[in-house]
Image 1 (spheres, rainbow, N blue to C red):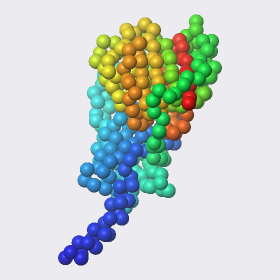
Image 2: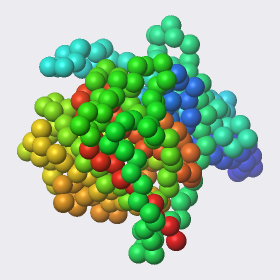
Image 3: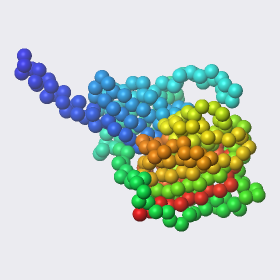
Image 4: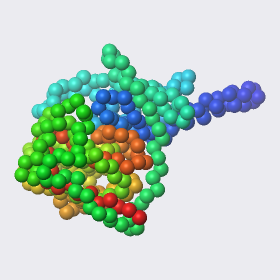
Length: 319
């Protein structure tokens, strides 16, 4: 009897080990028409305690994965989007089930994403392990020459995130503004560690954001007077809640002073520190690239609603 049990365990070990290889954090590149990157974290794959988080199957959130299994070497994880009633600015949506399938190929995940019951062909994607980033905001970084990414005259230095969508961004009296519906805009220059100062203004019900390295969104939102939350102004979107809501009423000029070194992020909103060297664990839904170990551009979100920019000054941080 013991011999049979040992033989069974030895036979099961390679499969269990292979299942465990899916665990970890993965940065995902997609083949969608809009430049888009996703992120998934998997733990306990190959055990009854398998769990995971995904950015983003729906609502731009960090979604919990509802079911994880491995069949014949293929990882299958399922996310269920609950039905939502109609809101003031949104239509009702039915419940939907999203299914991702992936196999390990030469250390990468080669996968597909589909909506159950949809006639749309599955979307292909590739995942690589999220890199370890050693840089720390330890006081050793020096400021290089500041760079004004907005010149106060035109949109030089910025391009449309989605090339086939009209880029309805203009500059009037030294202020850059969008006219939604339009595209997000992306800086032509890329940066690694930096300080950023932004002066911005929004109107009632505005929803925008600043993408750092083209991967991590600091939320801009009309939420004056509301409690801080992971979708509120100053948040690392859907990941880290600001310590306070430092928003001003819509129509007033506001500022962000943002510092990013490696994965350590500090945000000062209207002179109040709301995030203090928090750890950026991975991508947010604004991401247009998944190359976490490389410099990336800035994104100004303009596809949701109105936002105005008066200054956008980047100071690279170097050793």
